[in-house]
Length: 303
Image (cartoon, rainbow, N blue to C red; front, side, top):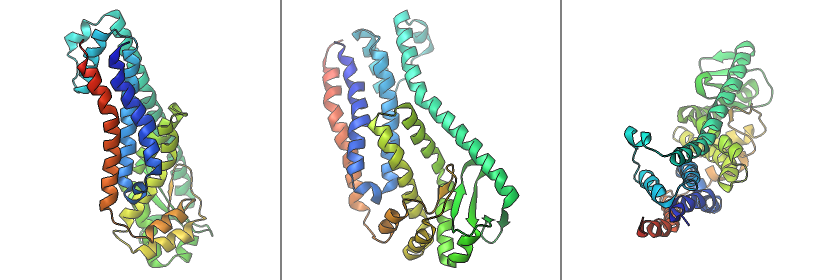
């Protein structure tokens, strides 16, 4: 057996199975959503790279795969002359690894383009039926139901219904607008596209399945935290309550929505971020310790 399969296999199992299992059960994730989002993003990158390396190792003998492990674990870029001396089998392994790595990348690009086309279409409609309010720095739509949402990316804009303007107080409306601008400033649509693309490429993988649900919710919580720098907890929580039934396009971020009740409880229950950060780092450390014996075992074997 090629023992150099162990490090990428261990990394793939940890990032694809262990870390998602820990994250969906971790209470700290909702207390420090930006840290949790970073763990989800790093786990996705590690799984994709490990799956590509694992596929390449399956095609190689132990001596060749050891050189591949050295390049991967040492973050070394092979010299051009080394690429020219590869055998046919090594070329095949490299091609297979690149194909596996290209699948989530291609899915990500496809999802970005799909969402961008949808946002551009919606922005064209807004130019026809909406009116820009310079005081709010937002586009106002004539609609009785309170709703506030944003279109991120190149067509970035915040959209407010006339029902929201008439229903919300000045402080509540400012809180909802701050929440939406946090999505735009943070470029949250990029992480949503990544989560959706990963779920499409690896539909049965726990990392993709749970991440597709957790990432959008954590992004809403991260936007709530950023908005709280400019508004009070009461103003944001009551704005979420008033906007909970509001609707928005699939490609947009809405201040209300189905997660409003959970986020309201979170906003109205202050917490300390110190301990959750330590718990988040301990989650990553636990996964690292789970993989460490495999890497040590691999490196202790002779070539």
